[in-house]
Image (cartoon, rainbow, N blue to C red; front, side, top):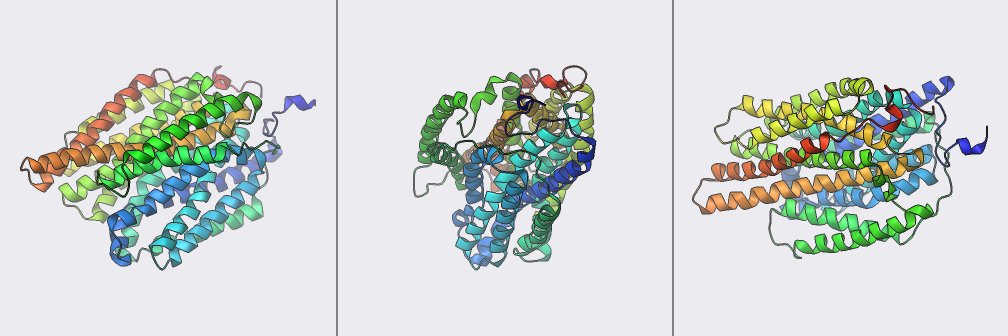
Length: 492
């Protein structure tokens, strides 16, 4: 077999029958590990008030537990495109789980806030590597005609873990101390690490790709500045901090432009840290734009809906968490079904109704008041969850499936980066609009509950307007090129 039939650095050979068991083990290990890590990412949202009390710190200081995590993710994810080409699957997996487990241990034993923030940063280094590793590995191991089913399982990881994180956190805080959030996650991380050491086999061939040294700090400052600026706006609720709120956004935006120009120049030379030639593929571009809008809606809702239920409807944190559970579970149940539907019917028949359902749910949320019934809140959240379930699997599969194999790792890293930036942007936009509108309501003489209700309506309105863009984009999503002929793999 001549060597030019293989893509350099990535195995694009047919999945041999004797490798199918190995591949199932690899994908299962990656799925369980990624689910644990993403669950850990959102578990802190409900815990901040308890941590402020136990550690004797201010709200702004406690928010660094979330900000530092997001910041590290935004800095590390762009580098994973290089790491996945340069190192074996097994090496990257063990590094990711080692970082995550060590960071979790640091968090569990942290005597104060600075060591706790350090632990979150170390955790985030591992988390940032895992998601692109999972998606790139699936694209290399799973033939095109059955990718939808596997990507459905990945959608469970991406959508259900953030949805049930706050619920789980609320239950743990009610029964145990905040350290137990880490003591309960640590054994899962260590078991995954031990299983990887015992059973994980290499499934890709690394190649010596050059690392452009200048691109690394440009990516770190560009993406990091953007996420930090957006997070500061979202978490500060418009308060003045030590520096102007616009400064990190301006610096991050300017450096990001320099990073993009450098990647465009380095792409044809095969030296880009993040190869932006992925955006030459129209299916990838449309799917990524829709995914960004969907992540904005998901993360904005994860912040605003608990605020509404607790501060307007007067629910306890555990009650609010349990209210979000049916939607999270529904996303999990629908994801494999949507994956099979994608394999049979393609993307557009799923993403159009999915984006309509998301829009309907967000427009319903714009009508929430202190008098709204719990049944309406639950129905809106379940509708939103169902709509997102119909979006994530087709968008992941179509976006990466439209790329040539040598760009899988870059596409995975770009999707991960855009998810982080879009999530931070969604939180910043929703919370900032809510804060401004609530302040105006209080100034006009409204009581706190009605003023906050008006602010939340305005925040949900931002998501509802963005959802109209999703509906428009959904008509342009296509089946990946290697699935055009009724799902049969081409060239396999």
